[in-house]
Image 1: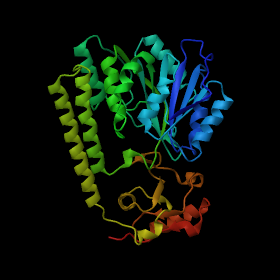
Image 2: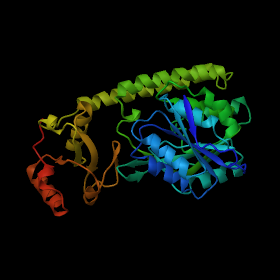
Image 3: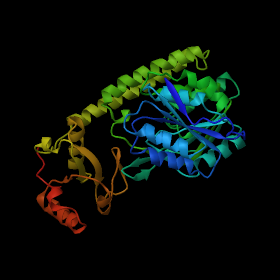
Image 4: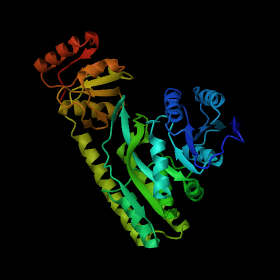
Length: 400
């Protein structure tokens, strides 16, 4: 069943409007920030389409509230079907020449769509790719290989080269996401139906394969104004073996899509590229297993931290082993890594923070992850001096 609230017939009058589609599911904590960031764009000609995918946490009410307050917002409700279906439903209700997507946990900078619409019009591209920043506990950073490029695709040979460069080249591949981009609606009419409905990992990459196959020109911009919020329950945090199996499933779909599109890539080339990716995945999985086996230092009686929010102080070997122990046993929720000497460095999937930033983070305990008691006492005194609660500061000699 599909229910549409506040769909207007007369609102769209100009041709160069953008339909921004947001699939919404259980996002009550982040949805207002997401929607406000879209409605506060410097480019004002935006139609915002919200597709509530069967939320039960109050997200659907937020969607309806925005649809009633803003004439350019549409609220659609469907039974829970997954993000791919939600995006397709939103696209069917779009009225604009250009289309973008934003996930309901994320948010964008005020000038993103103004810059993207100018780029796609000036370059005459079928879609424009931009980059994104990670947002982990409110800390924004970009560790991607950002570059700028205009890719012309004049013929079948050029199309195969573009697919290899943008999806399989480890040095130049674009980020495999449907969001952080802007598309011509005519392109999505052909490529969006090829996005699998049931695949819950890698569906964006299959979609981009189709997009490039149908494009004559693609712009890789150097913009970085999409903020991707790191989520602990994200599929990207799954066990490496599960990730490997999911990526195998995803790559198998490439063959099907390639056949459906009349072989934009020669079969033997696609086979070779995917084989190289799988070998790389096997090596990565093996490296993960080595890391697991190399854990030397562990937290004593770790069960007492079940369900607790933990700040780890110390980004050395002890801190790394403690983090691995928590993640492998699914005990404790690491919310931040703190270190006076390594601040603002990306460490695992955390940005190392300065001790003064601890007051901005919700936590239950700070576990000091160092070897010797003398160093631990110095760290404890420093934490007390900046207002940390002594009862929530923990140090025990690492167990080997």
